Image 1 (tube, rainbow, N blue to C red):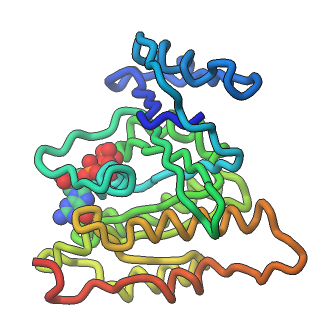
Image 2: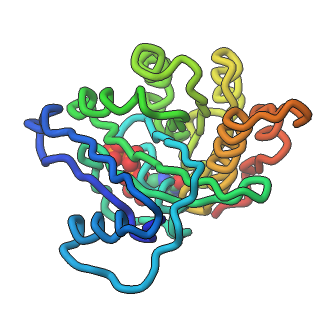
Length: 253
Ligand SMILES: Nc1nc2c(ncn2[C@@H]2O[C@H](COP(=O)(O)OP(=O)(O)OP(=O)(O)O)[C@@H](O)[C@H]2O)c(=O)[nH]1
């Protein structure tokens, strides 16, 4: 069943957050026995009457990575709720989860999206999750040079901890802030080409290319999961190139 509410997990606060407290529990049983209601009762301490929609069969895990402050949480909220979180920046603690169902070529696909803390002190926590992710969205901030310079280090970590065939996409976020841009779009493109990954500039504020990033990932994962012999091959980089919107000097005030 699909909960409309996020099933979130915030690790214990502060630098003493320990890997030892991470547990996974899987609820199994026939459809309708009450798995989702049990989870809601545990999470929120109440029973919500009415029916949740049946959980979709096909699901993938997508992880958001990148330096602290590049906009990972805002990117996820924009995708999930269509809203932008402005104002005071509150750094993510540990890891947080959200679910969203998207429709890909007529099929419902559930994405479980893990928003990770970019701060160095949570690195050992997030490492524990890499191997379960099927796709990674790696973000930098086009107004922040070091967030771009650190992308190579992030890719090294990914190489070390993630599945070998994980789908990776590089995203240059905050494309709406053209006056403070320090990373040219071409630099992002060149880096992405070097690593053979698709690339887009995005804005969690305006929503530019946010949905496209997740949809492209969902399409690629669905294609890999259920490739039919007569199905035309899907190339995520070509798809992204054909669909992406480019930021221009004057489109975002
Ligand atoms: N203008 C603009 N600001 C953004 C955008 N995305 C995020 N921000 C701002 O950047 C700051 C950091 O955003 P977050 O989403 O919290 O960053 P994060 O990557 O999740 O940070 P950590 O949780 O520490 O890893 C916030 O003040 C946001 O309002 C964007 O696309 N455009």
